[in-house]
Image 1 (cartoon, rainbow, N blue to C red):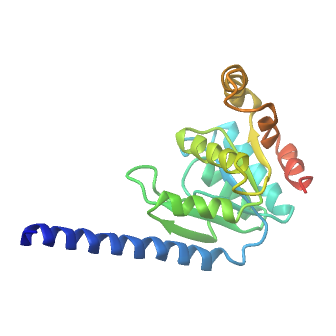
Image 2: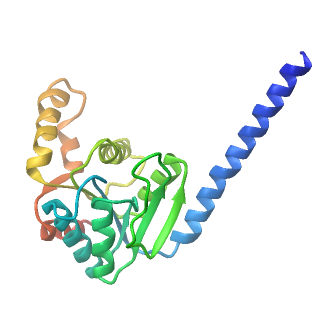
Image 3: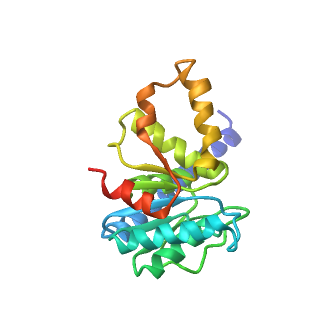
Amino acid sequence: MTTSKQYLLDELSEANAWRLFKIMAEFVDAFEKLSDLGPAVSIFGSARVNEDDPVYKLTFDIAKKLTESGHSVITGGGPGLMEAGNKGALEGEGNSVGLHIHLPFEQKSNDFLNLRCEFRYFFVRKVMFIKYAKAYVVMPGGFGTLDELSEALVLTQTRRIKPFPIVLVGSEFWSGLLDWFKEKLLIQKYISESDFNMFSIVDTSDEVVKAISRFK
């Protein structure tokens, strides 16, 4: 092996080692910060929703009522519906947690956090959303929201995690996806009828709290 090839391999090996240390550091930091959090609910939704949008107010109300019922609220810590969730949590005098990811856009954290974790690796952040949440509340959103939803469904379906409430908010928004599940995935036997029991669809903040509080 030539000296240049060996040098390149050594450089790659060193880079991978540093990457592993960075990943481990993110896990350790998050575990330490969240270990005493108590019962929490992760709220997901679009970062592109303005404060005057009705779904922003709905997210705020949901988070406020969840904290008033004894839950902490976890969001991605960014703008839009994440901000609404954190703002509502503080208004309800509860823990407002932001799991902030560094992105080339939409990366600014909101100002309504009393506990914040920083991440560069999506998969580490995803572990924290799952590990410390007793329920998921999924508001209208884009690809990121769908990613978190689908991951929770897969982990529940494959029994990698214990079943927990996955609450989709906004029947009008989610109806098209639900119809596609039924007309494509179910008919072609890609999923089973029982898979629809993994989640519920509601429209009001009271229904969200009820769906989570009655789950045993």
